[in-house]
Length: 69
Image (cartoon, rainbow, N blue to C red; front, side):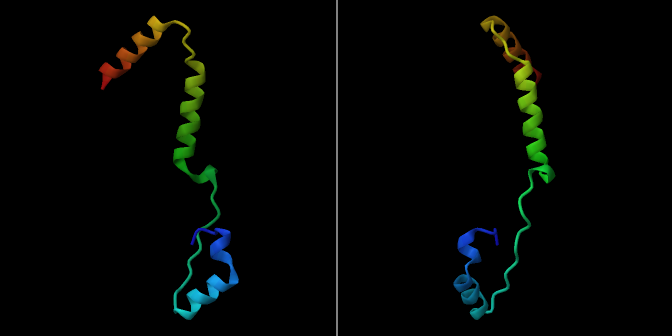
């Protein structure tokens, strides 16, 4: 279960145990251990470096990147 307060209530746990269910708890969320969080942080850093004031430069880089794939 996801550690939401609703699911931690004693009456909820009692109902689950009465139904002979086993409760498996998820570990606390840690963005440090989630690879996608590191990827998004990297993308955000790149975006900050790519501040383009010129529309022509923006279009140039857009079409350059699009044609690579």
